[in-house]
Image (cartoon, rainbow, N blue to C red; front, top):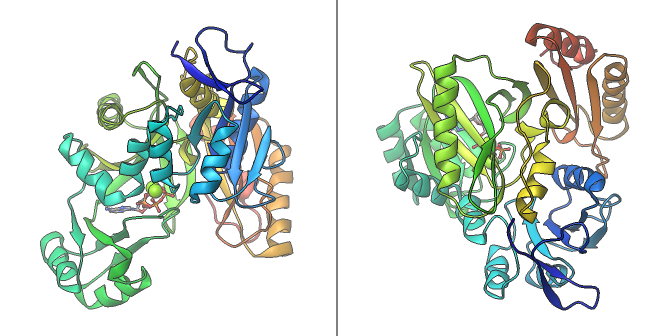
Length: 406
Ligand code: ATP
Ligand code: MG
Ligand code: MG
């Protein structure tokens, strides 16, 4: 069990080496979205206090956190102020003010994963360079600083070509698929222009997308959840199926790639590893998130420990839980806003009502301040005896008017 820096009630720093549960460690999470909310939910039974820093007054984690500081995780002053009330800091989003975290780490504030890891990951190009250096299999990629270099990438990698912005990307916002040389200028401007800092990736002709949630303890030990299969619609995660229906050798290879990638990073916590499975059985890394991840929501109902509880255990240096599945099959479906406002709410509400009448189905609603089209509003997980059964149950739930079939 690692040493955990904690603030006592008078605000001065003390070291808690043994008695977690008796001391008042507050874990501070930068970001109060759905991942922060589910961290708060996992913390509650263990008596762990989670505070969140988020600019939105009514963010998803806001009303269930031990404390919600309204402020931006990109703002130096806000992050510094927030850190004062926390014994350890972690993130639920990587797009945070990493310079401030680095400065705090130099002042011995306990931050997991390490700020350097967050720095590498928040710039996708830097992330790719880092993993290349550590011999992690990746699609080919190159930096693009001019229209000419974009053409060069097209010549080198062919079309379709994937253009990505280096920073602030999520849910595919920051990606553009370029079908031809002629389409390059439009794709570049759709991403905000060359100034936005872009890079290009060779198209990965995957047969499946896989993901693995990898936990890393404070002592560096690694524990992975099972390999899952993911589907994306318009670049946004649509479903996650566990376990992945792939041969054992492929699962082993995927595990090797994921653990190699996480092993090259520093700090404790959950890491979401997204992978491409190619036709020839090869596995390439897409990206890593230094935090709990959408692809790990299913663990709440399906594994002996959830990714959220495991993240907290990692950060606090507690014994890690058993990540294996306690049910034979699970399927997670993201509830996206189908329409803005009231109409979107009615559609989502209908899906949740249907889910509540299905055995093995659990509903998670994030209480976002407003419903917007294509935004993640909640999710449903169905567990059951076989992959076929959970698919059939999920199909019945989501097969209402206006909802795409799974
Ligand atoms: P997230 O919400 O997962 O953080 P993101 O905005 O970071 O998403 P990526 O993970 O880079 O976006 O890409 C989103 C999706 O686009 C991938 O899951 C995959 O379906 C597709 N994709 C990304 N890169 C490639 C590639 N090189 N070749 C083919 N498809 C790709
Ligand atoms: Mg991403
Ligand atoms: Mg991704």
